[in-house]
Image (tube, rainbow, N blue to C red; front, side, top):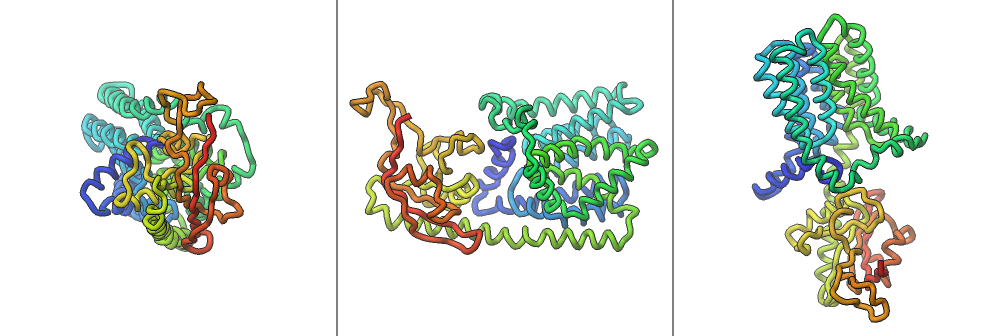
Length: 443
């Protein structure tokens, strides 16, 4: 949440974790429920109760929705608040509620949404454009409401933008013109595959048919025009993600939630039922893999802790922990939270050192950092006045590859690396290594 988007997820999880226990693990299912209610509220206003109900059913069956409902991530909170915002904007534009109150509620919802992700800002812009394009959009309460709404969203984005500026915009480097111009056919194919799997192929086809149908009636029906304008920036961002080879299904999820009620309308029941069944089948792997993945992190952390307790008496300097990637480091750090206290400012488990800055671990202190000293530690290199506090220490490294594929960044950083244990089976197997005598080179 710190690196890939605003800090709303981290703050929410921290707040719930203060209650004690593992209550924060319910944030995923609760987010799914709230997102479903928000989708039903919007769908009922735009397309009718029956269509809204079918849309919610379809949304709950797609793989990407099920994946997000299993984790305490940013997408479902952002989706819930963004859908509420869109429904309040529709109330204001369609005069179902007083303008002032609707714009106020819309602003509150969108301010919350942009604390979890950046993409709701694109929806906010589309809401303002649609409002100003209406007959009375440039007059009276409509103009003031849209202006107030835009100002609130802009102010809410300032903290995240300031943080990115302090990091020289490195977290957003993938959106530079140079990066976007770097075209790779295999990445596009990978992006298309990830989108079709995440959205389910037939549901994706239903959404495309719904877009075509809504486009044909947009001039006569404001609800159709509104849904198209709101989802257009999401579809453009989804196309960019596919172009870059990124998983676009979480970004396509808001468009699914808005368009599925229209997609389920005026379609043959048989095809609809088949589409829903196929989506449910595509969602099965998400439900089956999640318990195994969660258990794998717990098993690996138990093995690491047992090994640390066994080896600590033999290693007076102590051990530190390294994981092969940020996700694994986070999982191990969570399970070790009550057994190990990290140095101030340091994570409990380090992600393997890398020259790239691609996650929050690359912004935190790491085991390969040097600390400045008042005098040179080496009598020969007197101009170098820094020391690595981990020099000569041992480490436990947890990775996903066998010894023959061990990264050179680990093998060359220690005088000896030996495999001591394997956890799990198949592609979910984790390898635990004991790494002796850390040897880093001067900068």
